[in-house]
Length: 390
Image 1: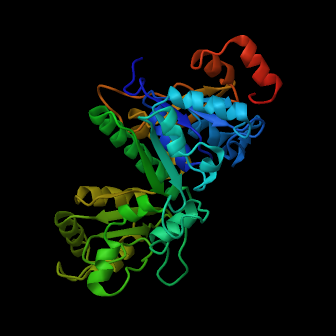
Image 2 (image 1 turned 90 degrees about the vertical axis):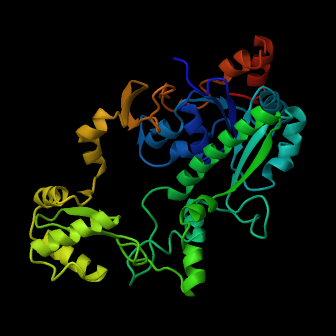
Image 3 (image 1 turned 180 degrees about the horizontal axis):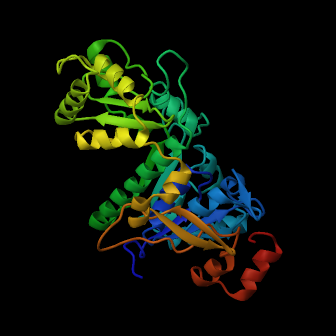
């Protein structure tokens, strides 16, 4: 099947999550992702979390649609192979600490000498410049630095991190977006460029209101549990129901706020339509405690109030709407069937696909050396014998 990015080759020098997440988003739409990994070790994501058959389940998703090539980049021969691959690639993705690739002779200027119109996405904790650029950084550090952690959790307790890799995934998405912008620029001008992306910056951009509100009010917005950190925007809350379940209610427009107030007034839970936001939330919580999850949701939906279930992974896997939209796909992996998120976004004319799950370490080394670099069998054999590749 022809896919929209099948004429783009990405050389991934990244590890763990943020950089690899950017390239997997492109791989889902057909880009040829060649992932360079350390022989005998590989990406640390391979060993993170639950394993099956000696293989990380998480890896099967983030490693999907990529070709694994093992090259020892600390050897002169390995560095030369990487440069040869750069010469036939459009994009390089890396997320080492600033200065690491420069010391290896693989910095942006070095690689541009090989491929003048190269696009290079560089993800790091704090960016390539600035007084903190030397610091190490992982996703949770970035979430805290961006302001996201301060805004998450109960108002009267310490802040909490989300239970997933928000900072890394957001950076991967922004990185993929930056690559597409740079490819468009290259198509118009013939020039490549470097994309310098710090892990904290995507979340800083997403929480676009925090600094303007601080500057206008003189105080920083404060976390407020399940509710929004400031009043006057909309009402959202997580409410417990009579059967011990929970639902989320979001009244995010004037019309939906009016509908919510009317429901609560008609139910005798709210004195009048002019009640303040705090009174509305208190009344809503008291009302949901008198109903089961399903009856509360039906009443809210009938009243034109936006509300929904709080799903677990099991719920997601059983939901008919998710199935109808193919939000989950099943991929074969070494004799196992693995369900994982499908390709997002869904596009009518140029859809992506999940061609394969994350591959075994070095599974495509010879294929890439032979098919992409056109190396002969003798040279490939020598590279294996000397441990440069595996």
